[in-house]
Length: 562
Image 1 (spheres, rainbow, N blue to C red):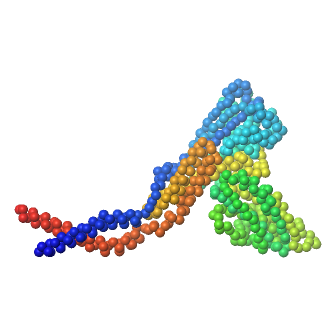
Image 2 (cartoon, rainbow, N blue to C red; image 1 turned 120 degrees about the vertical axis):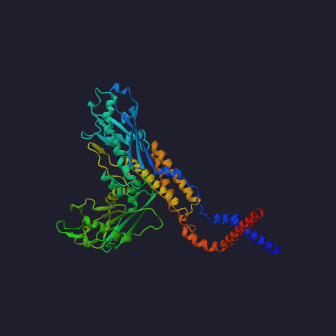
Image 3 (cartoon, rainbow, N blue to C red; image 1 turned 60 degrees about the horizontal axis):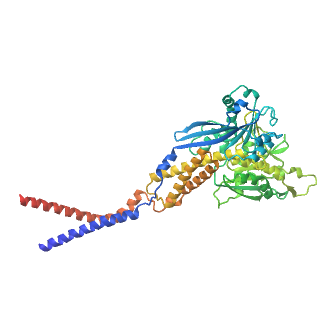
């Protein structure tokens, strides 16, 4: 009897020891070795970014030339005024604009510059005196007697960040400075709409966060035509020679790129990095057979058939698999001798002057006819030197549109100066930088909030330190970008927004988010139940037996006492 009691005690102690080891050592060890590692993320800051409140500030300096203000009005200058606007785009997005306008009189050197014979020379002289910072504007108010502007022009917009506004004598005589500024305000606002950001442009730039609403169709069309913001772009120039037996073509693409394209890309360098290449493709035909039009005595491509031209040609272009950047394709097509000359017609059956067309977010194609080189005694192949000035003029226009430089229709009475040799005016660059900064912020906030929601809903996804670092970097860059926009530092805002979108996309597309450590709960049960159930059943039964025996002994002791 004593031996049986000792063995029973020994069995109980063994069962308790095993259970203690499993609970104290086994369960914590299993929990620790199988738990999903999730680094800390700034969740509260990400939630704040989901409610986007963008503040954009623009500095405007209005300079009164001699003869535009009376001595009484001049006593109250310099003067600073601030105008605030607020727009609710949707329940999660609010826009606030702040325009700080400083009024002053012109200096002696500025007065000398405004005496130049033409507005273009005055614009250059004013730029040489002082260069306005990125994102700001200077508006010079000139008297009606000034010869800088033609009679039918009241506002001149130059190549830099400078505008000339002419006011009549009736606007200033017998009025206070406040009344003069109130009458001048509509013209200043129109200048801002042209040279700086507009509410329509900023709303379109928020397309990743909000849906388009009926508004300015031109701005929406420009947005759909242009490529989305990217850290870099690949530009490919292709010469298509479908009939090399008849045409021996020569194009100085390297020299033309350096002369016409590179100045524009240099000016756009704050926005993105650009790389260029060129190629010549032989025996490459269009995907559409041109039709002969007897009324024009030429072959034509109508607007409805242009959509079918790209796909067959694109298959021959090749792709740069080493880069994930968008590719802008510019094709120069020389028709074969059987379909020459070839002209492109628009929807109204009118000949397109440039004989070219572009496809949104893809590129452009130009048809270059060489039938003028044919003669009665022409020997083939004909040697053709392509006029690169004509070709690059078309490609440069298409490149501007595809990169988001909007084609504006100035209001009546406005004269906009040509963009010059760089292909881009300073204020056009500013407009693009405003839009790209807002677009980058909208894309980065959408990406980072989507990632946070995904990680919150699926708790088994591993969040390693690299992802946490990228998320934190994106959040910090977003906060800095919005802070710089609020104070009007456009250059820094663009740089921080680019960093934010790069960090957010690196985090979102990190391959470790789909690592082998990620299992759904049903798979975990399928793995662990066959492993732990055979071991846990004997331990549980032993514990139940020990508890049952303890209760039995307690009842026996109480019975003896009674």
